[in-house]
Each structure stands twice: as C-alpha cells, then as structure tokens.
Image 1 (cartoon, protein in one colour):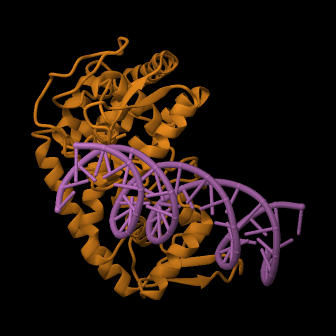
Image 2: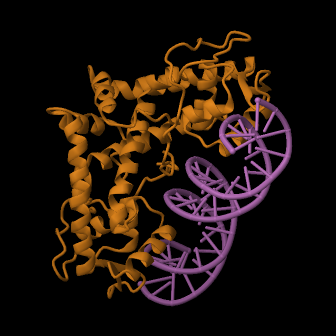
Image 3: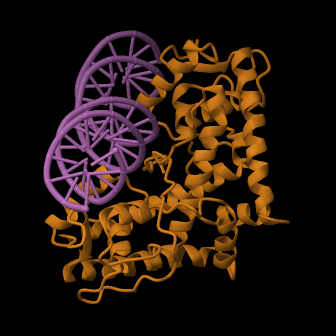
Length: 178
Length: 178
DNA sequence: TATTGTTATACTCTATAACTATA
DNA sequence: TATAGTTATAGAGTATAACAATA
C-alpha cells in the first residue's frame, strides 16, 4: 500500500464481540475488540490486507541486500531484457521516467547496472547489469523465492495455483508494476 | 502499491516474445515486448498487481463522494463501534494517531463525524457519526459493494469464496488496515 | 516538431519526536 | 509517571511541467 505501509501491528483490547452494533442515536461501544464489520466482507479489503503483509515481508527479505522492491524489479527486468532503454524498462515496471533516473543513479553508483548511450539513437540509454548486479540479483531471487514458497505452503495443496488463477481474473494484467 | 500508485498504463511495443533472455555478456533485447520474466512467477507480484488495480478502482468509486479510502474505512469503523476513542479506532484501521487527527478534522469540518470528550477520562475523545455521516457512509457502501460484486463476478462460480478463503491463509489477519 | 532523459517541484501517505492536558 | 491527543516535521513513493540534447 502502498507507499506500502508498515508496522501496523495494532495493540487492541483482549475481549471479543461484546461491542454493540450500528449507529443508533447515542449508541456506545465501550469494551471488547473493535468491530471492523462490513469492511471484512469486501474483496478489496482482504486483498489489500494480504498484499500489505506480503509486501512488508518482501521488504524485510530484501533489506539484508539493501534493495528496495523497485530496485529488485529493475534489476530483474533489465536482466531479462538487456540493452533496452530507460523509457522501455521504466514503462514495463510502471515507474515514471523522472523517478526512474534517480533509481538508476543509485544502482550505477553501487556498480550494479550501467547506462550506455545507444549508437543508433544517441538520446537513449541502453541498460545492462554488471556482473556484480547479476550476482546480487541472483542472491535476491533466492531470498524472494524462499519467501514465496513459504507463503505458497500456507495455502495448502493446489492453493498456490488456485490463487494465481483467480488473481489473473482480476484486471491489472495490462499494467506492469513494481 | 506502494502509496497506491495510479495511471500505470504503460504503452509498450506491439510484438511479443522476440526478446532474448538472460544476461550473457553483450546480450541485447532490441525489439518486441519487454519480458517481465520471473517477476510474474511470484505470488507477491501477482497479489500486488491485482491489489493495486482494485485499489485504484476503489478510489475512483469513492471520488464522486469526495471520500478517500482511509476516510471510508474510518466512517465504517466508527459506525460499527460508536463511542470508541480516537486511539482505538485509529489502531483498528492502522493509522497513526497524528495522521488520524488530521483525517478526523476533515470529517468534522464536513459534518460527517464528531468528537466528544469522554466524561470518565477527559483526555480521550469518543467518536460518533452524524446523521449526515451515516447517510454518506450508506451511499459509499452501496458504491463499493457494487464494485466488489463486479470483481466477484469475474472470478466465476465459487471464485469469490475460494479467493477469500485463500487470502485468509496469508498472514496479515492480526493487523487491521485501510 | 517530436522524443529521451533530466531537473525541479509538489502531493499523498506514512512515521517519529516533542509538546499539552489530563490521569 | 503514564496516557490521549496534538503539533511539527521528515521520509518514502509517485506525479507533472519545463528544459537540453538529439532526432
């Protein structure tokens, strides 16, 4: 969510289900757990809640490598499409060109990626990973894959495939993103 | 996901699958669509992509009522828990107290919610919806429910229930959020 | 005239520290 | 001293306009 949102561990009261319902005049709900109520019935709410958790997990997973999610995606997409221009890679990941420039500055300073002027069109910059960048990417993929498998294991037999199939039916496929 | 991200409609090349793979020295990928590659194999990626689309949809749905997602959640949770304090409601939704104050200022100025000092503890503010706030919330719930049903319809028979069951197996349940 | 990439800038969401008034 | 709420502020992430170099 985001941004993404982090550390949402809300410490709440211990009781359960003792609060009154609705908005009758003067009604009060003084003890027990908060009723999130209908909010939990929306696909969007559940989807977002799960996604925020996964994304926070993702961020923690990549922290040891000092990689932000957008940096990871950039390394991975450059690796799969070496020589493409900034505009192409940025569009594929869903980052605006101005922001992508700063992101690449960081990767270049760390020696993970490099820009080279295209000979055919000297306006554009072709992107490549350095060996160091490729090595870091491989390390990151290992960590992320392990995390992904842990999540998949929670979903039970066939759960992972079912989830991916259902998520494909939700639009958003036309976009690319982080 | 991030924030939430919007307008990610990336205009890309028309071709498909003609780009070369991997990061062999000097490899180039000059034509065709960008290969997002392994990125699409991660649950986290698909989950985030779907969630961002749903969230953008959600934002568009509430725009006619001039409600942001966090405002909608706040109205809904206050309605379900009238008389609770700011700290309790804020924690349930996953908003930091400083940010929640500003959010409530907006709702109060529009006459949708009100704060009243608790008699038992004059430090805390009990929250209630005004009739106007309740009416706007009901209107918002109609819009959001209609959108949610459209998404559910895309998932096919039983798809909605299956998706919600799978999402419940992903952690994040301990938190409450927007 | 159009496009690539950059600079500057702004807006939103989120987070923390320090203050106040109560307890 | 501890807590509820506020103020001030800072950091991400994302968005647009204007510019220089090149086409």
